[in-house]
Amino acid sequence: MSTTAQGAEQRTDAPDQTGESTLAHRLRRAAGINELWTFLILAALVVFFTVAAPGKFFTAYDLTQIAVNAAIYLVLGVGMTYVVITAGIDLSIGSILVLAAVAAGEYNIHHGGAAASWPTVGICVLVALAVGTVWGTLQGTLIATGKVPPLIVTLGGLGAALGLAELATGGQDPAGAAAANLQNTLGYGKLFGIPWLVVLAVAVTVVLGLVLGGTRFGNYTLAIGSNPAAAQRAGIRVGRHLVKVYALMGLLSGLGAVMWLASYGTTSIAGHSTDNLKVITAVVLGGTSLFGGRGSVPGTVIGVFIPAVLTTGLIVIGVQQYWQDVAVGVVLVAAVFVDQMRRKTRERT
Image: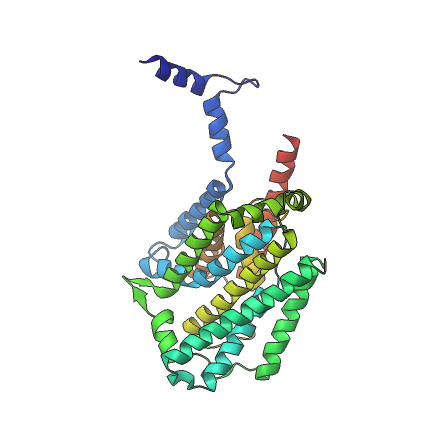
């Protein structure tokens, strides 16, 4: 064995000042990785439901349905990851999705309805994205320049966006809100056997995961969440960046509206009241701290699938739908509790 190799082996096994070897220290750090623990929880759920309902869970059909059902929440969850990393919150995402879907749907109804052409479909997509982005930008501006807490701004945005959608439609889901072209392609179409909804969600996740982990925009987001005053002193325009983060969340809510119209063919005005709960649960489960400064897109991906697997599994074993909402709520509280415990442990060490 060479001298260099011997030295490397010695360094790996040598104890540090606390008496703990470097190898043991690395194992201890690996055990504390948020994504690892979250993945273990997901794996445990899959094993439990597979055993509880043999032959009925974890089939190819179930996996496809779980992925399709999680696609929209994954897109929203990626945006929420950025928001929560800045120590913010966005309770309005479900209402923004509804408002964007209504705006796009109304345009589609007056330009062909279910038989609308591809140019009309393209404009509808742009309308949904624009409505979401504008609403997110407005909320971000109020938070950044008006110094209004994100909780208050987005809670008000939740009611205002939903109210505007109900005013535009009379509270009823309009018929012909989605073109058949959109549904047949994005809603029901597949690429090499993978639904287009899943492909789109994966593409958004990969791109924004790379942005968060390897670009200046991602670094600024993490820095602001860790210490906004220090970020400001370092030359980061905190207010402007916050506006961009909430605009991104609005944009992804608009994209979620397009995906919803493609998948279900309706605006579902009354069907998104708990979207914020599901998405925030997924983000926190994925290890993103509600206190800001820490989080990852891969963690959110795993976090999104925990409620999805939990809901599907409960249905398979015959649990009432109302208990599903209870389970998701309990999981959210437990995730926040664990996050606080981890934070206190880091502060002590």
